[in-house]
Image (tube, rainbow, N blue to C red; front, side, top):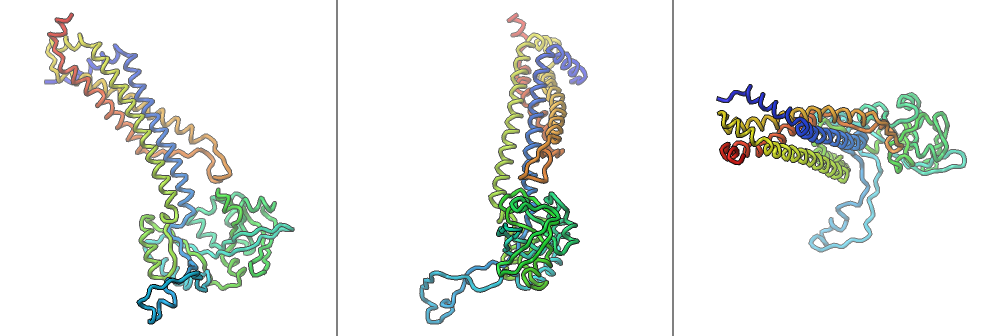
Length: 420
């Protein structure tokens, strides 16, 4: 019967007698696991940051009224040409407003749906920004500030002023950072908005926002929803866009199709609108995990080589153990135990090393105008990565030690002693 206490004592003696080799093997595991933790934490943190920049500001479903040519043309309704092949050129869009018809009843229906976390309404208008002799064209969006802050973290992108400033000021405007820079405007300054119809509306700058996308920051601004409606000369039922946020983003595609069919509007889900971005995220994750697993496999081969050499050096010891009554299975357990101890110690040190480096990265300043909400490098401290790290350390060292241990198990002590 195997005495595990004796097995562990012999294992301890072997490891300490070859302390340098054992330390090198443990360090191989340490740096393999540590590098895995650092790489996967940083890369997934970076992916989560990029996803957040898109998901936080992008509605799960965007509803609007798309102006497009009618799918059924007058000639298609004619009985005379019903069975003919009709070729129609230079089709023009039908006359229609950009507003969503029956927007308020539609919002009421969506609010009651248990799949919906919240909705916000917007009024978009093309304008000219006028400040002194400077005139720039752009887009102003009327929003419900409180809903935007709650559902889409709108306040995180305001670099000067606050959402409350716009909420309290009916004639206030939040300018894009690029737009404010071009017009040399700051909080407290005034400018005028001119509609395409020629109306002029004076407003006060109550804040500046920065999305990180220059194409948006150079043309876009925000006002209160009611202010935008008044600017266009419309009533409170004038809504050009409805943004929907769901409890489960995976339901967005089917729900958007349902909305389009039932309410005769255009509804685009977030995955359709950001298909290229999602593909990029998938590829980055694939590269991250591929490189991480490769690092762990390389560390496993290092352990295998060291244990393999250790067996050649311990041939006499193995022969003596077998000659004194130890079975081949006992010898195998001794070398597997060595591998697992190296894996456990190296793995734990690797977790500590990886955590320490990850904390340093997480506290390293990272400021760029393109990402105004990010102050340090993003790191994901997900506990699952540390569990995977220690499990892989034990599994890889077990496999690395198993083959050399089987070789030790099959050694014939008579052949070793005769060779001496």
